[in-house]
Image (cartoon, rainbow, N blue to C red; front, side, top):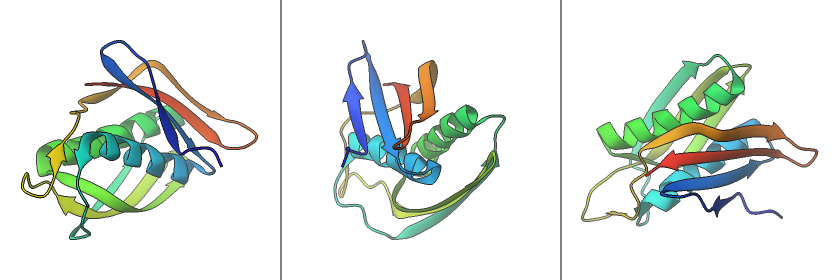
Length: 137
């Protein structure tokens, strides 16, 4: 089976190519890529948050999802570990379970700031969904 994500070289930024059999799996896998890149430590399941939003396009939905994840980490310290996501047309609903960042339990490896639209692509192939995204770091 193909890995769920891989890095690609991009000057001064972080490039990630992510895969999923479904859109929901694609969105979960980009979240895993973000937080496995950003934080080290065994994430506990102590807190739950809900996220709901709509976007103008599927590309916007993906970028907005990344922004929501990074916002919740930056402002609230939330690190997701378990995901329940449903995507209906251009609407996303998610219950995320995880923990709040504590520098005694977790360490920052690479700070990810924002997703970009630069060279962004989201496609459905015969095998899976695939997205290519670059993050400011």
